[in-house]
Length: 99
Image (cartoon, rainbow, N blue to C red; front, side, top):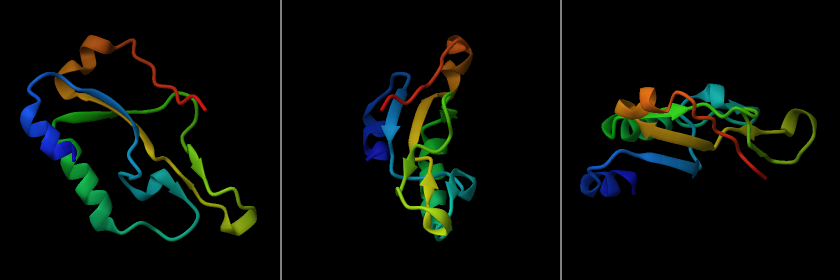
């Protein structure tokens, strides 16, 4: 969907939310590893649209399966993306997830 929108949007981007995707397995703790192809597809879209992934200030993992012990899974599904050309213009920007 981002690729489709990206073809028509010529302005700078700031977009955030739950993308239900991770960029690499460091954004996941527990459970089975995600298929590399899915992570590569998400990274490809971000690169194609010249976006930068801003790190969240208040914690890394925002999705947890609410289980205990070895079956607990945590993932970073929330991403805040900004046009690469605009990163320096917003050096003060902070990203926070509010629940």
